[in-house]
Image 1: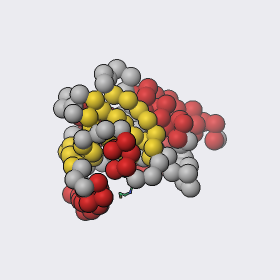
Image 2: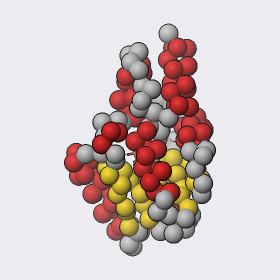
Image 3: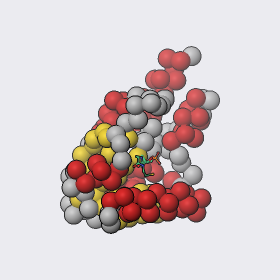
Image 4: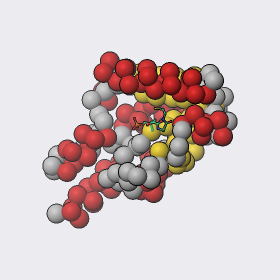
Length: 160
Ligand code: PNS
């Protein structure tokens, strides 16, 4: 079975990494699919986001990191994935994720979404907060994989 884990990963956090490490134990192959949105580059370029995800998962087997644009379900089908993976941090994530999984199920004629409940120690971590805290000089060491920590630290220093 092949799983696809789509997201913005702007940047990848320890919460994402926890979901990936647990997904790897359930599937033969895991594709991490970084959404490349032409209209919205975001704070970290797609190229750098992919590089950071690759560095963060380099010790995991059977994981590939790719970028995609367009519909997630279309890309999942092209890549032969059987299941979409999403993490749930808190009940507040549920409404959005429920709707997305239902749309995806409908659009794909039956592609299932499997939810991994985030480890509580990561449940308050989101990429936007990480960037905010880093931008204001807070310590993000415990929130992100080491390559992301180094990258953001450099980027914030250059901005000063
Ligand atoms: O990390 P994110 O930003 O929560 O990920 C959201 C993502 C990339 C999974 C979602 O926006 C997505 O699937 N975008 C691709 C476009 C698409 O398929 N839209 C229909 C389902 S909402």
